[in-house]
Image 1 (cartoon, each protein chain N blue to C red):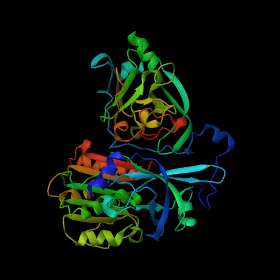
Image 2 (image 1 turned 90 degrees about the vertical axis):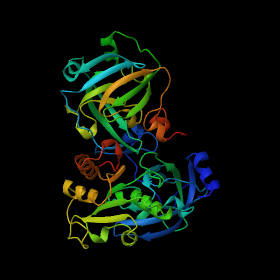
Image 3 (image 1 turned 180 degrees about the horizontal axis):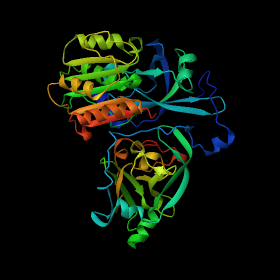
Image 4 (image 1 turned 180 degrees about the vertical axis):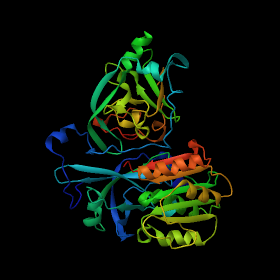
Amino acid sequence: MITRGFGGRRPAADAAERLPPGQHLTQDFPVLSAGPTPRVNLAKWRFTLKVRAKPVAQWSWEEFNALPQSKMTRDIHCVTTWSKFDTAWEGVLVDDILAMVGIEPPTGFTVAHGYDGYTTNVPTADLVGGKAMVALKYEGKPIAPDHGGPARLLVPHLYFWKSAKWLNGLQFTDTDTLGFWELRGYHAYGDPWREQRYTDD
Amino acid sequence: MTEAFAGLVANRRARWQPTTIAAISRLTSRVMNFRFLPSEPFAYRAGQHVDVRLIAPDGYTAQRSYSIASAPEAGNEIELAIEKLEDGEVSPFFHDIAAVGDEIELKGPLGGHFVWNSDQPGPLILIGGGSGVVPLMSMVRHRAARGSGTPVALLYSARVWEEVIFRDELLAFDEKRDGLDVMLTLTREPPKRDKDYGRRIDPTMISAVLATLPATPSLAYVCGANAFVSAASDALIAAGVAAERIRTERYGV
């Protein structure tokens, strides 16, 4: 159904190719979250890797920063319809976290946990093979609290609510366990190119 | 809400559908009110939003989310208060081109966190900045429609008196003195009423507003620009409201 009188403001052709359906380009870095921004004390910060209910490894901030650091520059896509191109992140690939522990991906599903109690579910296959990292820096600097610092998950090929802020752990699970937004009407997987915004999309 | 209507809540999937603009009115110099009549009416909860999609002749689309201003009890029409963003793509269309009778694609209801039902325990504190008052308006309208006595403090920050969206209706709610206390704060001119403030929100103001409630709020809803939401929610935490009781909705920037 064509909207009477709507012409639209089209992005340039090169930008249009990089924009998933229903998205528009922003130069800002909007902040969205379900609650207040937690202030995480680096001296007390811990990152815990769990297989099912069992913790298998834990790092302090210093220890985690001593893990191999990688860079990723990616376009990111928020379900609220903004996209931002070429965001530059630095952190620890999930592959490298597993390698440090000396394990293969133990289950098919993962739940990311945040300091604010936030959770989000991601298939493990979407976190390995260089696709995702625990980001510690944005544009060369520590990640600001509003943007998820000290550490946030970065899964840039899925809608950005999957890139959990204020990350304190990854938990491998046997089944796909819906997270915070996934239980509140948002899609279980969240592929922007298939426009999987809401549960029934 | 009838049983049949309530049944719609559980069964309906949010999907795109054509709606007709049934009414347009001006709320402030920057905000206009639009009432959409869906072809398939749906039930929703106070605080939820819809997505709106505009489609150009060549198939190009632009899509945005807008909070619902109407109460769930208000009938089939969905009311959206849309602020014109000068550099925007969708809001200028609504302000400058859209007319009564136009068909607009809409999807809803959406969102399951920034929602309130009058059956939930109070008291409640609602803090809105600018057009962030819109989902809070749905909540106070819902409270009134249900005859709820839940104590509610609404603190609403606007630049000037003329930009207070839904001003007459909010003042009328306030004058009922039925447990809903509406306090305005104006950031660019002096306050008009004794109970209002004339500055940006700060911890002192938030504490004073909390003190008007009979107990610590069981839930706090904060909506507005990011800096506003951060300031308000940090002040709530400093005043002793637990972080997990604070629900926020941010415009992003």
